[in-house]
Length: 419
Ligand SMILES: Cc1cc2nc3c(=O)[nH]c(=O)nc-3n(C[C@H](O)[C@H](O)[C@H](O)COP(=O)(O)OP(=O)(O)OC[C@H]3O[C@@H](n4cnc5c(N)ncnc54)[C@H](O)[C@@H]3O)c2cc1C
Image 1 (cartoon, rainbow, N blue to C red):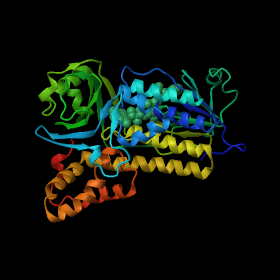
Image 2: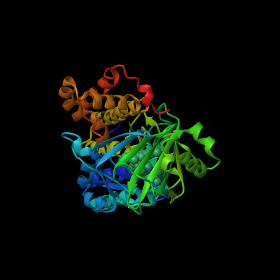
Image 3: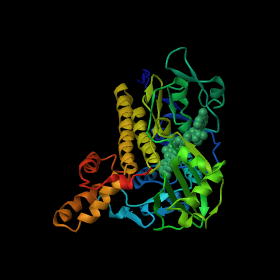
Image 4: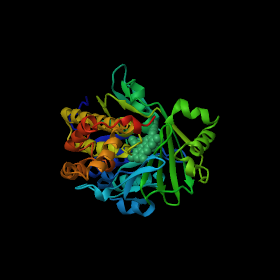
């Protein structure tokens, strides 16, 4: 676990200026710490992760960027799930009782990431467009910044920092450097995504999740375009062409659900590919380092949980570093692992069909006497999956697990499973 220097943690180096790294930098700089961020600005033409759950909005307020984010994003009032070509369920966040926030945004990620980086700069963090390199100290688990990396800060860091934070996202700089143990999820999917024009929507602004013949697809409305991502078993999608463009265009046209509109859309961007993303690092901190954001773990795109996990972790980590103790870092590590584990279970209920079997059953029984009594209770807690709160509130989480195990009556969940 983290060894706290006698003088406390004063100087922090953060590797990665994505949402998790830049949020942490903002909160630490506001606490008066010296913060250097290695924010390499080399990004793919499109950045993935455009749908925010409502539970993210309080973090945008805390960073002071919500009006700016609203100015270039699409207002997101709810979520729509297409279960079959002729069957869908739509939820508005306003329906979710006592929700922290009843709306959210779909964000162009290049602009969104820049808004958070600017917040970090305003707070006093020093950002450098540099690729940081780390070295292991002997055969210990301690790390240090390479001499060139230190030199690139032009004196902002005159010596090694008290703490190195890995916010490098899928690069997972520290986990790879130290060979940290990891846990992978059960899915072996490939996500192919691009921005399209002419995509129809069931509900304006909603993030759409369409169950396909194999896998599923997202439709995220952005200003002037729709982000469409196919999340499909890797061995299956390879049969649709030699290039990822062929695979994407062909499957979109041929699938039983997206085929209805897949031929009449225009692709505006190249296709990007993501694989092997269900990955959690089992150790979140060491003697002079700690992990945050995707560098710690990411579960699955289906409920747009990635940024929420990153913001939540960054906020707790800022408090932990601000008043450091070995116990505090243990609590941090456990909190993030628990959060990821909770999403892991919830995501499983989407793929095995249990969540939507339960929600459809709820729609049927709400007309019975018992249904009317129970309905209020379930409507308060179950749709919190879509606002992001089902994993952070213990009661909602427990009720969801209980009901998906024991509340399906005689209904067969495999009818709604995602293959
Ligand atoms: C298919 C897919 C779909 C997704 N959809 C959603 C969604 O709709 N909603 C959602 O909330 N989440 C989604 N996510 C997850 C989301 O994209 C991530 O959780 C989020 O971007 C993580 O933020 P981060 O700051 O941890 O990492 P990143 O955003 O990856 O940022 C890391 C940064 O570190 C930089 N970096 C790496 N190495 C170095 C180095 N050595 N030196 C300097 N800089 C370095 C990188 O260039 C990058 O800028 C999705 C993920 C996938 C795989």
